[in-house]
Image 1 (cartoon, rainbow, N blue to C red):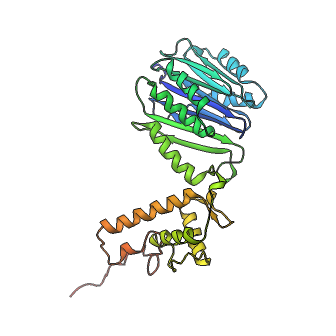
Image 2 (image 1 turned 180 degrees about the vertical axis):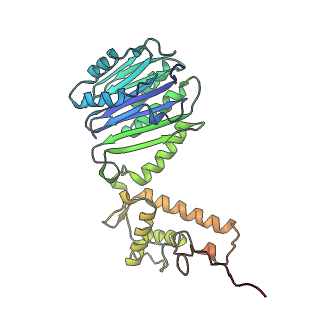
Image 3 (image 1 turned 90 degrees about the vertical axis):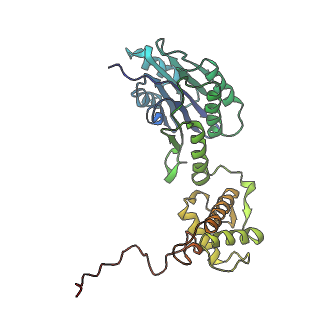
Length: 332
């Protein structure tokens, strides 16, 4: 049985200003994020696709780490591969130099476009307009590397993308020490099977961005006092985290309630110690409180008072997780 072929379009890029390397990819292939993208902070990024040689990923990163350029890596890997005519490869090195390869036997349409600090490549596409649109979108989109990679994927799909359809997508970006817990894995978001994977990837990324990243403009920070403090108290009260007065005084009880909300909703990266709050956290809390209010309005309670407590409230009388033991006494 011949090895599987799958149509894919991807972009590999480096952002010099932030020291980030990343890959964004979409394919009519399940879990493309587990096959195509590879990256290492301070070293470079790789996309291996078409009749993908997954060894290209770690081999390319090892050569890049040893000082090889993107062009050298592409040339050496494909020259040593007897199946190179069926492969496609995109590489960006530590200095942002980009190179790509499209084998002569990749299924039409297949090709690539290399630009300053990035390379776009694809196979089984509607035509060359796909990679061309990706390149132009990456070059012209404002924002950081994440915004530009996602914009490039969307632009490629608008030009037809993979001519067999859509199934999975992924965004993988590395930055030294900027990931969760100080890791280099800054963003690793995947959609493994979905009818509109790029739109779903963007939706999941927005949630990831909200909770895990700190990309907002510091000038938008809001001071927690007066109206802002009262709004936080109200929303925290609706959700059951705060039981004090709604007076806009940001006291110890208010701060403790907000801290618990931050921890339980994975906002540790957005936590501030200077008496300010990010607008995105305010919006998220407001939306959750509104959803809780709607739930109370439209859901009939089974236990009296159950819907007035909010999901952040502690259960009455302990955990309530142990069911009562059955009465084993015999009757009669």
